[in-house]
Length: 307
Image (cartoon, rainbow, N blue to C red; front, side):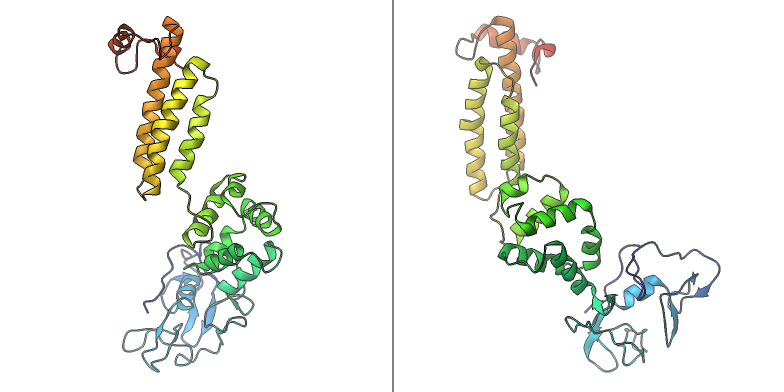
């Protein structure tokens, strides 16, 4: 298995769970045995020498077949003569990397727990215990299965995430689209996407749902003479067509965008017609349409439009 390289400034130390930007620009301190950078503080000292946070993080996130003993396990040791990193036993690293909870060889994130088990324990705590609801159990499993559980550990520290998870755990936020709709925000949409992806929540077309909400807002405040024909046009023509596309599995982003443009222009025209000539869609004349079109694509009186 290919080595898992660190993609950011995060570094983990056996004595600290805090992630941050390693101080690698210092010209003082001891050089890292692997990268050679001067480091004011070392992450760990192994037989090969001192390691910086970045090299330590990479070491405890590298798995594969050890080129010396040919066992598939964690490979925290330095590169062998064959070029690949070696396991802790072959590197004579005096540390047992097995997690006390899952027994997987991995870098210890908290005490003797790997990052996944530490994350699972934290999620159970904020949810009020190991969840009984199948969707919540699946959500915990999905979060813990992340490629980088350390990133989820950081994500869940957000007060908004904590509030959302507590609400899901104690039932004040129902595990449904309607329940999640009551708590808008990026954390909610992230959890909704996870639940849908893993089949724990029925799929809902996000563009269709937002279009339905947009129609309701668009109709607010319009005079009845304008609102009624616009509502009929929006729901019986556009909404019905977009629902059919969604049910067929088609992407509705483009159709929703086009429908919004057409409905907006219809509102502009009917509002102008009502305010300028006191007529409706039913009493509109060809002369009215010609006058509107003569004013350009946006009509003759932008100041009178209701947006």
